[in-house]
Image (cartoon, rainbow, N blue to C red):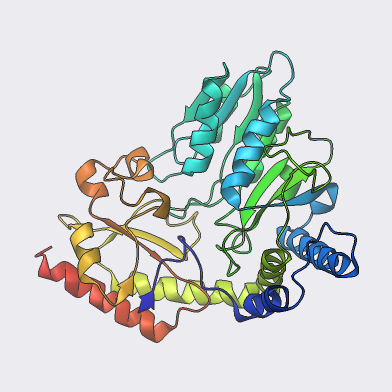
Length: 371
C-alpha cells in the first residue's frame, strides 16, 4: 500500500516508537504518584514537555505547554476556556469559514451562551484578507481563532499579521498549528494560544498539547485530580508524552531534510498531473498537501478503485458524512467540482519511486472515467 494521507495521520517515527516502549513494558507507573517509579515517569513527561516547547520555536518560554488528549481537546479548551474569562464588553469571537471542525464547532457552541460569532470568508485562493479581520476586530472582540495550515487544501494563513491585528485590538489570538508544526514557520511570539497534535508529526495518537501564554487565564475543561498545575485534570500517559517528545525532536533534527524532500515530491507531482487543477494558493501553502480536482471526475469512484493507494477526498473527520467539503465550498467550488477533488498527503517516509507509481495509477484511474 502506498500511503498518501499524511494530513489524516502520519506514520509513527521509529524514534517515537522506541521512546514509548519502556513505558508500555517496564515503567508503567502513574506520573502523578510520589513513588520512585512515579517520579521517574513524571521526569519523562517533563522531558517531553521541553521537547514540545523547543519544537514550537522562539517565544515559547513566555508560556507553558499543557498536554491534552489531542488537538480537539486543546482547541475546545482554548476557545471555551478563554471565553469564560472574556472581559466585560468583549462578547465577540472571530474565526474563518475554512477552520477545522473542532474550531468551528467550539465557536458555534458559544453562540448558545450568548456570544457573538463571526465567521469570515476567504478569497478563492483560500487565504483570509487581513482587512476583513481588521474590520471585525475591535473593543468588542475577545478572541480570534485562525489556523496556520489548512488541513484540506494546505494553504498557509498570514498568522503573524492576523495575530497583530487581533492583539492590537486587545483580543486574544488562538492558532491551530496542527498541520504546520515543524513544516512551516510558526510565529508563536505573535500568539496567545497554540494547539498541536502528535499524530500529525510522526508521533502517537491520543496526545496533543496547548501552549498558553503567561498571563492568559483559561477555565479548565476537565475537572478532577488537578493535574497539569490544576489546569487540566486527568492522568497523563508517560508513554504517549514520550512518543510526542521524541517525534518533535526528530522534527527539529530532520526538518530541513523533510522540507527539501517534500519540495522534490511536489515538483514530481506537478509535472505528472498536468490535467489536474490545484485547489488553493500555489504560492502560500505547505506543499506536502496537494488538493487537486479534475473536471468531470467522480472522486469517490477513483478512491474505491485505487486499492493500492491510500489517499483522501478531504478531511478525515468529515469522511462518510456525504456532504461536500465546507473548505472547498468556501473557496467557491460548487458541489460538482468539490466531488471531483482528491487530496494527496506525503512526507518523510514517502519515496519518490512509490510516489511516481501512485501518480501514474491516479492518472490511469481518472482516464478510465473518460476525463
